[in-house]
Image (tube, rainbow, N blue to C red; front, side, top):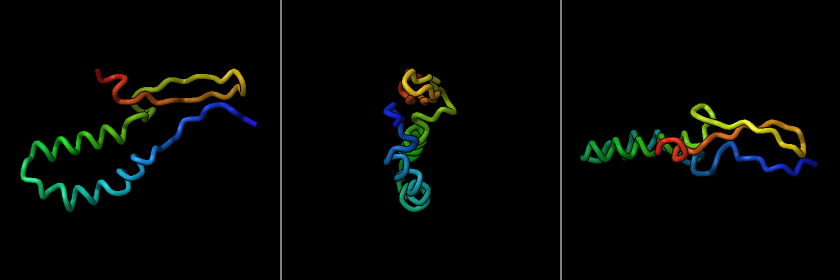
Length: 81
């Protein structure tokens, strides 16, 4: 049995955002009169969806217990500061 720590591919917040943000953009977001606020909300959600995505930055490591290789995406905070 493999007891190595595996990282979740998708966190629950990402699933919720992916499932509902497009509808939110089309129905509720455009009701906001402040354009800067609309853009800010879009940017924050896009950053949240890309957080931990290996497409942007990742580390690859090999487990010494099971000899499997893992890819772990960095959070957006770890490389945008």
